[in-house]
Image 1 (spheres, rainbow, N blue to C red):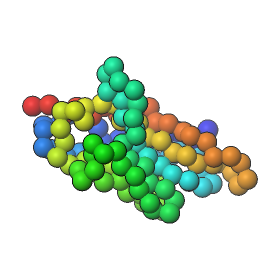
Image 2 (image 1 turned 90 degrees about the horizontal axis):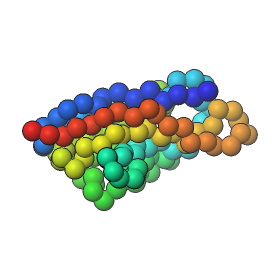
Image 3 (image 1 turned 90 degrees about the vertical axis):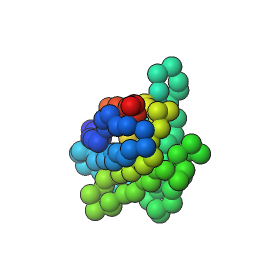
Length: 121
C-alpha cells in the first residue's frame, strides 16, 4: 500500500509564504505525475499544480506566478512553494501521486490525507 506523507501546512498572514512537501511511503516503481489539489469549505476539490515525469508543469490560473511546484526525483518528493498567499488560498491541500507500484501494473491515483493552509491576519 502506498501512503503519501504531507507536511508544511499552517497559518500564515496574507502576503506570506509556505512550502508544502509530499513523499510516498511504501514501494513505488515509477511516477507518472505528482500534484497538489485543494478543497475549500463548500467548494469542490480543484487542481492547484501538477508536475509530470518529464518535468512539465501545469498550474491553476489563480496561482500562476505565485506558486511553484518542483520534484526531487531521487527522493520521490514533490514540493509546492506558495508565495504571496491570499485569504482565498485557504483550503485543505491534498497531495496526489499518479504512480505504479510494479512494472507492467497500471498507474493509480494515490492521495494524501490533506494539510490545512489558512491565510488570515
